[in-house]
Length: 121
Image 1 (spheres, one colour):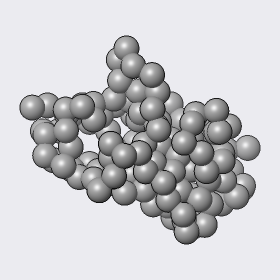
Image 2 (cartoon, rainbow, N blue to C red):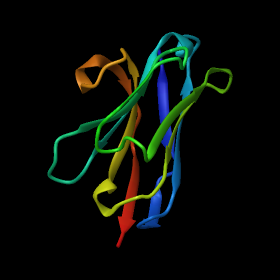
Image 3 (cartoon, rainbow, N blue to C red):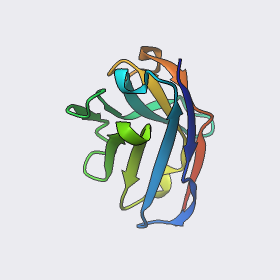
Image 4 (cartoon, helix red, strand yellow):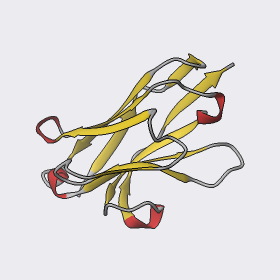
C-alpha cells in the first residue's frame, strides 16, 4: 500500500527550472519502481520518466531526455523530477506513480493527485 502526494509545480517562464517532488507513505515504498507521467488538456496521459526501486535504472521519454532527471531517496520516501530548460509544451499536470518499471500507465498501481506545471513564453 502506497500513498503518493506530488508538489513543486507552478508557473514558470520558458527556459526556467523546476523540481517536482513526490512524497510517499507506506512501508513498501522501496520495493516499487516509480514513474512520472504528464497530461495536457485534451491530450492523452504520456510517459515522462521512470526509475527502478534501487535507483540503478532510469528510463526517459525522448521528448524530455537531456532536460529531465528522475531520482529517488528511499530514506526520505521521495522521488524527484528535476526539470531544466522548460518549454511551453511541457505545460501539463504531472503525476507520479508506483508500480513496475514501465513506460505505460497500466504498469502502475498507485497514483498521486498531480501537480500543475505551467510554462509561459
